[in-house]
Amino acid sequence: MNLSRQIITMSGGGFSKEIPAYIDEYIVKQVQNVSKIKICFIPTASNDAVGYIDKFHKAFSSYETTHILQSDMALKETKDRVLKQDIIYVGGGNTQFMLNKWRKYGFDELIRLAYQNGTLLTGVSAGAMCWFERCFSEDESNEYEEFEGLGILKGTLCPHYNDEIRKSAFDQWILNQENLTAYVLYDSETLRFRDERLIAKLDT
Image (cartoon, rainbow, N blue to C red; front, side):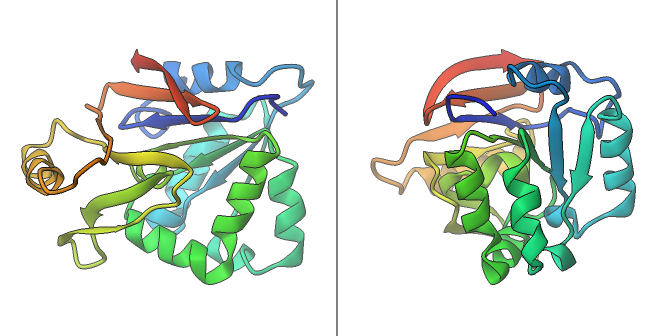
C-alpha cells in the first residue's frame, strides 16, 4: 500500500484505447514496495460490460487482478477483497448510474475506507469525475444535470472537454457555481492528486 493518499483522474485513454497504455504504466509505477501489485477494476458505470472487463484483465495480466460486479457489492467477502487492493481502477460510462448503485450497496463508503488506508484510486471519465464534490454530466436519460459526487476531492471535474456539446453545457453551468473549483480535461490529459492536493498534470 502507499503511505500517502493518491487519486489519478483520466479524461480518456488507458487500456480501453490501447495496450500497453503509457498512463496505465504510470499509474502502476506510483505503487511502491509491493512484490506483486493487486489491482481491482470497477466497471459499474458501463453496467458491468463484459468486453471492458476482459480488456482490463488483458492489460494488467502481469499483476494480480480482480473486478467487482454490482452483484458482488452486497457480499461480505467484497470488503476484504477491496481493502487488500493496491489500486482501484474505475471504468468509464454513466457517472450518475454508477454512484447510485454504489450508494445503494454502501460501496461508496468502502471505497473511502480503502482510500484512507492507502489504496490508490484512479479512473477514466466517470471514474475520474466521481471523486469530486459535485458532478455535472448526463443523467440516466442522457440529459445534463448536477448531482453529488463522492466529495473526496474538492470542486468538480469535466472530462472530455474537447467535446463541444459537453464543453458548452459545463461552461454554462459553472458560471453559476460560486466558490467551486473547476478542473477541465481534454482526452489526452490526466491529473494526479496526493493527499487531496493537485501535484501534477500530465499529457498522455
